[in-house]
Image 1 (tube, rainbow, N blue to C red):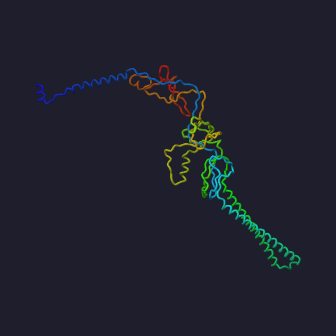
Image 2 (cartoon, rainbow, N blue to C red):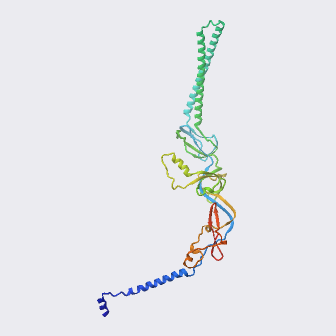
Image 3 (cartoon, rainbow, N blue to C red):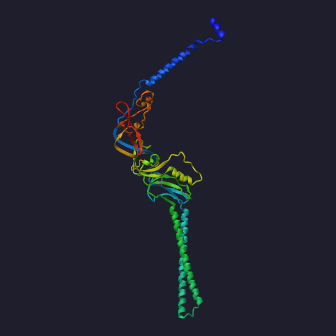
Length: 404
């Protein structure tokens, strides 16, 4: 009771019992943390374990992947130079056709009328030629008689006027004959043009091949204006095809004409087909888009677009297994090495952390990696590709890493 009165007299409140132990708990926690830190810095380190693989000798093939589509080596579109009603279609998709074979027919009735009219006009002009020839013969004979009489009479008869008239008549007859002959030539040209148009009414195949598409049916009207309408698409030879792919700009420097490749298609999973590089474009896809945009008033930004280069691969298709339009993924062999030293790709990408090195003592030693150098010289590097190098780490017998 005296203590309580003394606290009241001094104005001091009594301390709660639980607060008396807080500082001792804090001191104990600090001591434990200090011990853990000292054990971390000066204690024995766990042995670092590495996944190792023995280097072997073998064959190394470097490939570049590209995707694209199969296409015929020569594909033609067949159109019409005439406008008119399609009355007959005699070819369909997948039909094999030969050069000159009829594919469709445009109504030729109007053209036949023009041919008949041309024949009649030619006959009329030919009759005018015959008439003009008779007139020339008659006027020539009349002029010859006048000249003979003038010669026999010593120029007294006929008069000069009659003689000039005879000569003029003959010249007019000759001129009329030339006009009639020119009319005949014009009639023949018009008739030939009508016959040519009549021949165009029969749509024929320009090449020997297979019909890939038909875009016309009987009863439709073909309107031939500035652009020739496409009626058929024909592939000349499907036993030889090409694979059109896009090569990334990072890989195009390794792709050369003549390199071999293998490709797959979704239609035949697990089956590969051989091919050979036949062309690599110098211009990129942005070159084509820039040329296209420059001809219009709208400018398209190419920022962020993936740059690629078109390439063609020659494909043999003797069994006609492959078809135009199939999507293919090709692996182009850019390098093929035989009997070389091989290591896993992971070893070329491996980079040890600082704590994996030899301890140099104390805290600084635990944070510093000091690799052992073979022979005491500079680091040796392993060549990955043309112009590319990578450091290779080799584990020695004592568990340390050598830089190779």
